[in-house]
Image (cartoon, rainbow, N blue to C red; front, side, top):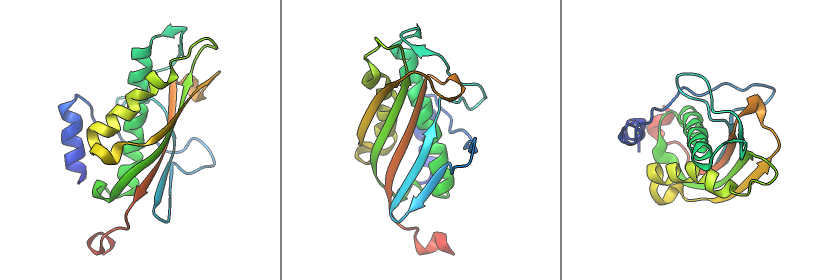
Length: 164
């Protein structure tokens, strides 16, 4: 699957693939090691700028958090686009997502929030988008984000065509 197919699927559900964000510190936004692509935590940053901020259970509802998780997954895909040079056919399997939800101590619906990310990956990648997952409540996230999600993806080596 090429970048154009991902963009078409996103367009069908009213989303746009954003530019990949640069790292905010001394870390890599993604790393390829052997047959794995690890994408650092991505927040709910909008393609037009800005982000979804706040705490679940304190002004943000599950639907708001689910949208934030969907945007975080969209930013994971933007990092993958750079790492894979737009060749999404190299994706064998999303292995693991970890979702962090900025939430009040009594908020217990973190899995429902992170479903926004999981559902987007299955919509775009089918069975290869299914993954193991953790959904964790935290007291705060960078920039006040509502959600942050990281990913581990199994990939195939680039074809001889893309190496040339």
